[in-house]
Image (cartoon, rainbow, N blue to C red; front, side, top):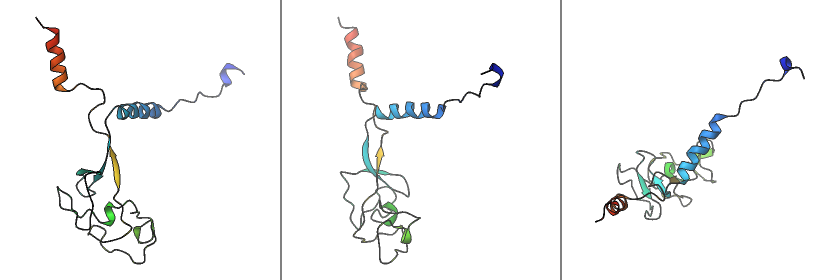
Length: 132
């Protein structure tokens, strides 16, 4: 093929490299499943929190046993629920006693970096450099 008539080069997607870099950074962190309040964003550990019909967010008081906090909540489905329900719940923010309720869990990967030394470890390492 003639040099002047070569097809243009396809540039690789640099966004993928950035995504991979961010994913590696996230994998280096301690992660935990949490229940995040859909109103204020406050997080509660999933294993420590029992969500009953009267459970509320510790920070803002929003009902956690509600449609908005359920894993089956989907605005594109009939009655905004992925499960077959007989009648719609009018206020999706209010507490209800739906037997199909399952709390929506999210992965919180904002914890400490794995393998990172704590402040106490760093101080002890520094002191060991200047032992008499």
